[in-house]
Image 1: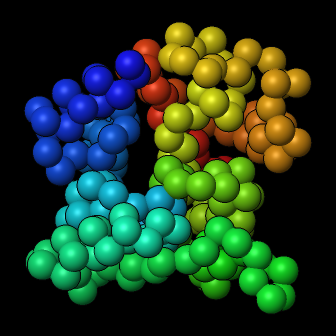
Image 2: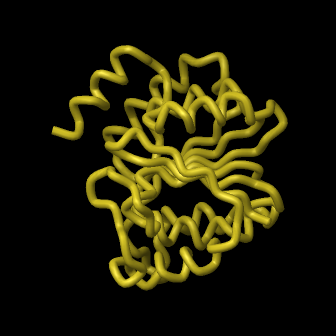
Length: 195
């Protein structure tokens, strides 16, 4: 049932990310063509972001979805700005997860914006912290599932004890950071500014 509003939003707003409208508006005004961005979990947002930022690195785990989005990228006027990677969620022979290892390859303090909207969100968040510049923004979609809040959206977390150990750590690390919580009462997007 919760997907019906998203489907309606998609039809009315083709090409717009599946974030909250308030988050999309904020990002549309905030993003600059010299911003370096990392997108974890790709989709319709890929080209929307590529139009607004400088280099965009995007990482996806799902083969068919990757192929669909890659086809769109190849016909886009922004393809020269996008580095798009298909990476597994399974541990490799070295005990690493390629999806997370792709983040670790990025230079420290080189990113202006990160969107976490894919798998392993807690591990992605922790891996991204050293990569993000001071005053950089991390966007976490469906944040009500990972951050303690009073959100009315489904699956919202009310107590720190409702969270995994990684999310407890992340909630503690970012406790005093500037945040902008946005919600459409179905899902929430949290924009967090790294000090």
